[in-house]
Structure formats: structure tokens, C-alpha cells
Length: 515
Image (cartoon, rainbow, N blue to C red; front, top):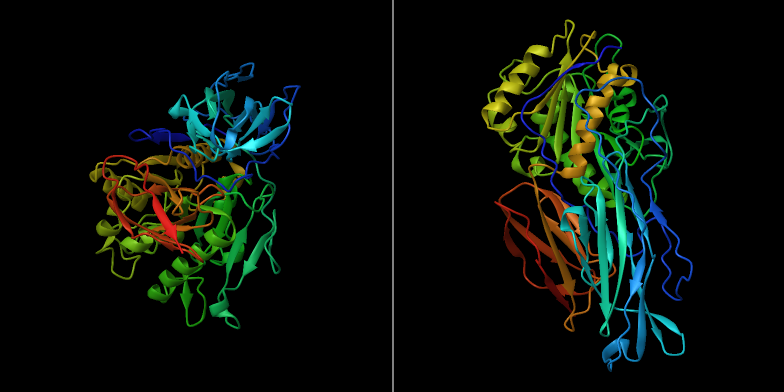
């Protein structure tokens, strides 16, 4: 297959933003909280199996060089008196003593570090330490919790330091970025039953029991409870030719995500209490269904709300904007936009004849976008090119891809390895760097300054919860002034806060939760 004619209009900047801190222990390891390792052993956080080799040349892919280092743990001993929870300690250690993070498909998971103190008799216990990271470009670490998250967009070696009772210990963590483009087996059929790793499952929302309305959910084979995953949301094409227009037969998001780390959600169009295989149907009902079940999926299946990409082919490409950007509330949900063969522009293909297309497409607001089309007689190509011009006129040119040798189809994602790699590179770069967005980080504490776990933080469509030490991160937020609210099942949080994200991330947006 020939290398596709890929044009990257503008730059997709790779900025160092981190994914949400996960609850303590959400690292793929089992950190030791008691005892000290006497034989250093490298701990590796992987994000999937080794990438499958490919022979296609790829002009738009960038290979990151991996950095390798001999990782060591060091500790210092204090000769002075100590006070506080570390009273009587003579040495401090960190578990795990070494860490190697392999970033694949643009994604990695948080790692939890634990500090252990040793007294003069050799007895060790976990202690509360203050943590720091010497290179913020490589990731973040919570100040007291020891939860480390790689930036996912930069390789290198960073030093993490813990301090307690006038003692310090440090570890070095190596971050390696794999330039991988995984190949999926054929998409599994839509089946009834409970969602499970590797299955594509029919989901009926409780409000629609007994109707013909349902959506599809695919959990990747590496899915585990307690972790946060990026997600690709797809809207189906119209019924025509061999395409049924049904949730059951969607494939674009499955092959785009590469069956690794990414959850895939297929949302329908609705009319008269059933899924609609052609046209737009009941637009308000469809928007409400998308919002409700997007939020429900994020909450239930461990989705990072700051790493959700909306996509579609043909009707689905237009729908990514016509429905996905219909108003500010639903537009807030997305990190990026992939529209193949059509776009929401001045055309008779939407109920308003494209009158609101510029307003809707304007809600992309500098976030990552990829517009693609078939290079051989694709009837959607003209609208795709108009979409490129429209987004470019806003000052944020999208990435583009003309898929060689195909017309109006999305089958190339399964068949054309080189073109699929271009699309995957865009997706993986988007979830790694979260371009065009900012983050809010902070902590929820009680009246004595102790971290409060499982507090709920919300900013528009973005909702997350604090980890075991009270830390949270809201990522992938559109720039501007955001209202952040804190709630807890038992405690009462301090008042909502207005946070200005116009120019940069916001740190230290803290709340107090009291009885």
C-alpha cells in the first residue's frame, strides 16, 4: 500500500500535561509498604504488549528515542534528633526502588511510591513523606501521596525525592516512549451481556429499557478496574450500500484506537424510541442521550474525562460537530475531533442547512482535530475540505489526511496500515499531549489538613475524584474561566471556586471538607 498523502496543517504541539492521579495503588504494581528491599529490582510500568512490526513507511510519524539509565535508590541518615511521625528513624527508603515507564499508544498509568522509615533496631514502617520531582517536564508527583504520572510526551530520566524526619531518599525513574502503531484483530460482533475486556457489548440505558434504543461499549483487552483510560466515541454513518447505519456495524473507532488502552463507545441517533439508521431524527433526544450516557460511561468504566475524542464517518463525521458541538455544554466534553469524509459546513445535509455550522465548528476552540477523506472519488471530500478551511479561518488549522485509493468508506482503517498509522499517530499524540487545553490540580483536606479520599470534583462535563491522599486533577479543559465544585458523600466541601485557565494550568486549587 502506498504511503498516504498526509498533510499536517500547522503544528500539533506536544506539551507536558499529566493524566489524572489515580487512587493509591493504581499503578499496575503492588508497592511494599513495610520492609526494605535489599536487592534492587527494576519495576516496569507497561501500557500493553510490544508493538507489532509494520513495513509501511510513515512520513508523519515521529519516533521518540528511549532513555536508558542504571536506576538506584539512595538514602541519607540524620544524626540529629527527629520529631513528629518519623521520631527515632535513622534511615529512609522508597518502594519501589526503581521504576521504568513505557509509554505506548500515547498512554501510561500512574505509579504509587511509598516511603518506609527504619529505626536503630532495623524495624521498618511506612511513614508520611513530602515528595518532589526534579524535572516537571517529565511528569508530576503528588506532594504527600507519592503518586507519579508521566507526561506521556517526553522521554528521559527524572529523580523523585521523599523527605521525612530530616531524612531524604531518592529514586530515578526512566520514561521511554514507544513509537508503536498496533494492529487489531477483526472487530468482535456486538453481543448481549455485561461489558468485559475484549468484548463489544450492547448496552441499554435504564431510561430506555423495553425500547429499541441502545449503544455499544468496547473495553480494551488490558482494561482493569481502578485505572483511568482514554476513550474514542463514535457516531454511526447513514445507511447506504453495504453500510447499515447501525451501532452494531460501526468500526472506525475500534481500528483507530488499536485495541490498547482506549475504551470505544458507539452512540446512536434517536427517533420515536428507537435507534435511527438514517438522518438526524429527534436531535434534542439524541443530544440528551449522548450527554447522559457519556457521563455514565466515564463514571462506571474508569474513563479519564480529559481524554475523550469524538469521531465519525459520513453522517458520523458531520454528527461529531452537529451533535457533539451543538452547544457549549456538550462541546466541553471532548479533547479532540476526528471527522472522516464530510464535515459540518454550509450544506443541505443538516436540518438547519448548515446555518449554524460556523458557530458549532467554532466550539473546537483550538483543540486537536483531524479531518480526512478518500482521495479517489469520495463524495464527502468537498465538505471535508470546506471543514479544513473553516477551522483554519479560526486560527487553528487541523491535521488532514487524504487516504489513497479509496472513495466514500472507512474500511481503510482496517485495510490500509500506512493510513491507519497516520490516524493513530494523531490520536496517540492528542491523548498524550492534550493540545489546546489546560488543567486544574489541587487537594481536598479535612480540618486538620489530612487528605480526604473520594471527594468528587466537577468542572462542566469533567468530573473526577480525589485519590487516597486527597489529590485530584481535572485535565483536558478548554481555556477560559471555569467553576470547580467539590462534593463528598459524608462531608461538606468549601464553596465552589472560579479558576482562570485562559493562559495556563492552575495549581493548588484546594478545598476543605468538614462534617
